[in-house]
Length: 333
Image (cartoon, rainbow, N blue to C red; front, top):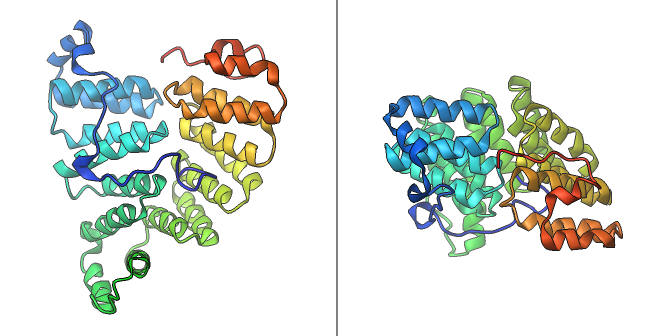
């Protein structure tokens, strides 16, 4: 989840194959080294990419997965899934959605992909698509077979007054009840995580916080859950409480772009503009393509009245900023 800007910086109504994927490493740019790696089996290359991802080397992971789907197997659902996870970590939800949709097209019943896709759509404020994917996550999951039928019988198709708002509310209510029934059927951290996302959509932030905290009891080292908890606290005007959650996330994943950005937004909300600027700079160092952060940095510096540093924003000179702020340049990018 993204903090303080509700659920992201851009909105998209595109879904599925309508959303294009732009390769960071197009096939024409892959050099002889990558082509040589084409002799490695698809499974070996997939495992190399997964290891890079798990080690937090997102740039290398993206390059590996893009090499795989371009030069070896464009229908590899697992590669598209992890490629989507990489972009979600880098605060590129539109790119994440494009990859995750391609994964679902190739493996429609993958629970981890459907859950990740639902979260990314919610981040992009496309709540209808997000709820649809979370519903599919339940109805396509054999663990919860039969639950959807009971809920559909409760709601049916009645009372359709043509009001879009009412229809949206019914969909939200239905997905929430589905998840609660699934929780009674067989509790899991994933159910609590999904409930937390749905409670964010309904702005029941206290319930969302409780859901993420419950999920963390089972997955205390899950950096993305700590981030979701922080984002929920921040979105409920509890930015000071959000900071420790983000710190927990970053302790477990120091290169977590979304965590650094959310931390910066919370510091801005607390009017700690110097620390906000430092976190924006760390975000940009990890992901130079996050160009929207330069505008946020300009605002933070202006609020701090550091007018002398604004020319460095104009030139986007990260290295020069190291004389004024403590952050680490990522030489891998």
